[in-house]
Every structure is written in structure tokens, then in C-alpha cells.
Length: 439
Image 1: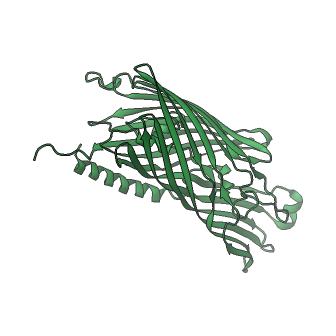
Image 2 (image 1 turned 90 degrees about the horizontal axis):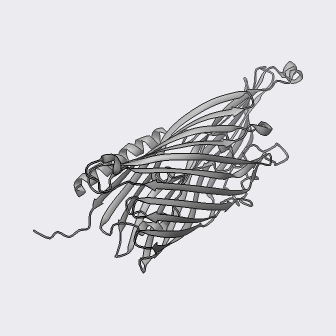
Image 3 (image 1 turned 90 degrees about the vertical axis):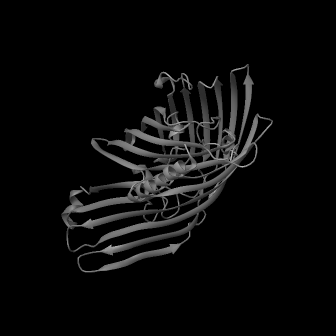
């Protein structure tokens, strides 16, 4: 593929994805659990990582950009310019007791480019989702004694918004085995949460309260990978990452109005900064086994301690504070994930059978969210399937992925989510830095 053709394709992708991002601002993702904190944390990585259960800390693959570990950026052809972008379609079924509902969303997942710098060093720049807020629900009070005096009372809640992370990272390889990398990450985005109480009787005023959050937070990420050859055709790679905590800055606007048929009164209004609220640090470790450029198997573990982050006591983050008590049904805890995945390519160089050049993937995971609900942990588990279909010369391809899973439980009046997510990624590759041999 020529540089000119590649540039046209990449620019077209950027414009398309910009349109998708704007049209999907209402709900980047949809889940009632996103009412708390900064919302529902996104599954890390691109479609390539997602189709393998979300692994990537110990992955070194010169055919794909791996944003999970900044040290992995050096696993590349030395003259290659690479780009990766993907879309995510999320489908959920909810159950709480006898109540059931469903949702589906469609949004951008990532946009990343990568290129070499000098010898064994390389750089990558990109945009990834960090968290999404999207929920909407309502109910009627059913206490006959209250309704008899006030008339019907309804309560509705809604929220929308996203936090993104723009990053620039680089890595270098020493002695052909040890790779080190570092990233600067800038979190930014907005979240809006609204709660409304209404009375059917004209003698009573309702109440409208909510929060508008405009947030930013810088952070850093460090990574390493070490590859140990085993014989002529296989190797073992160990990897590790550490992401620093990020102090939230920006604006938090909180309000409460009394609304009725005659007039609207301002009961409370506050405009300020988030205060002592932070995004937690994260540690990750992984190990992978690679055989003859055909088979790769990986296992990853991550841990992030959110206790003490301040989310459960700050306006706009706590979810549903009990009036006067300053308490929330949500609390922070330690988030953990266990992920395993594999990829297999029968024969990358087969010129007769196309299906032998396809890369097949699968994975599974178990994770614990960063919050509790009435003291109960929220866990999720699932399996993933996927494949990369090669197109055009080089390493260009289309990656397809599916994620089947379940989150939460129906016990203790909690909400259970059953979901099927689809991702599609576009892997673009070109040689940009080769000197012409002839004029």
C-alpha cells in the first residue's frame, strides 16, 4: 500500500469515527451501576486485546499495536508505520427481581498510531475510553398512606457522559530481550447526573437535583517486558505495568430546585472543584508463551485499590447520598481482574488457502469492580472469541471480536447484567521509512 493511499484511508477513518463519537455522546455505555463514581470502567485495549479476554501485558506481536503495555510498542518492524482503530457495540439484558429491561449502544473504542523513532525505540499516540456513564430508570412510590395525602409520586434518574484518556508513550529495547516503556496519560471528559421527584397533586412541589462534572486528570504509566527464548522456535515473555494514581481537577456543579405548578425555587447551588478525589493506581503482571509465530497463550492479573479515593463521600460521585446522613449505598473497594487468552494462525504465508492466514483468538476473564453495593461486591465473568481477517499486502487486516458475559447477581435486590458485545477493529500497516534505491 502506498503512503498516499494509506493517508487517505486513515483520514477517512478519523472523520468517520469523529462522527460516530459525536452521535454516541448520549450513552457511551449503558448500565445502572454507572451511577457511582466516574462511571463504568472500560475494558482496556483494542479489538485485538478484547478478543483474547483482554490480555496484553506480556504480548509482543509485530503485526498489531498493543496499548496495554507501553513496552510493547517496540515489538514491530523497524520501518513500519501502523494505525489501529475500532468500534464497539454493546448489548445488555438487565434483571432485578421480576423486572427486566434491555439496552444497546454503539461507540468508538480506540484510535492509535505508532511509528519508529531510532533503532530499537518507537512511539505510539492514541485515544482510549476510560469510563462511561449511562443510565435511566424510574419508579412510583406505592405507600398508600403517603399517596392518600400527596397524590402519586414518581422518581426518575438519568446520567450520561464519558471520561477519555489521550496518551503518548514510547519504548526502547535493550539486548534484544528487555523492553522498557513509559506513557503520559491525560484523562478528560464530562458527566451529567439528574434526579427528579414529581407530585401529581398541585399542592406539593417536586424536587430536581443533579450534578454536572467537567473533569481532567494527568497520570503516568510504566511498563516492562522480558523475552526468554526456549529452543529455536518458542519463547516465554513476562511483563509488568504500573499506572499512577490521578488527582481529579476541573469543575463540579451541584444543584437542587423545588419545582411546582406555580414557581421554581433554588434550594441549593454549589459550584467548585472535585476536592480530594482521585483515580486509583493500578498494577499489572502477565506471562505468555509463544511458539513458532503460530501460537501465543497469555495470562494477566491486575489490581487497583480504590479505597480512600474519596468517591463515596463527594457530591457528584457518591451516586445516591442519603439526605442529612452523607451516606451512600455504594462504597469503594479493591478492583481485580484475571484474564487468559490465546491466538493461533495456521500458516501466515499460505498462498493457496485463505483460512490458513486467518488469526483465530479466544479468551476468558473474571473481574471484581471497584465498588460495592450495600456491602456486596459486583463481579463479572465471560468468554471472548475473535479473528483477524488479513487484507491487502503486509499486516493489514480487520479484527472481529465477541464478548459473552454476566455481571452482578439477582440476590439482595441487586441487578444482574447479561451481555453480548461486538467489536470490529481495523489494523493498518505501511512501510514509510525506507530509502529509495533508484532515482
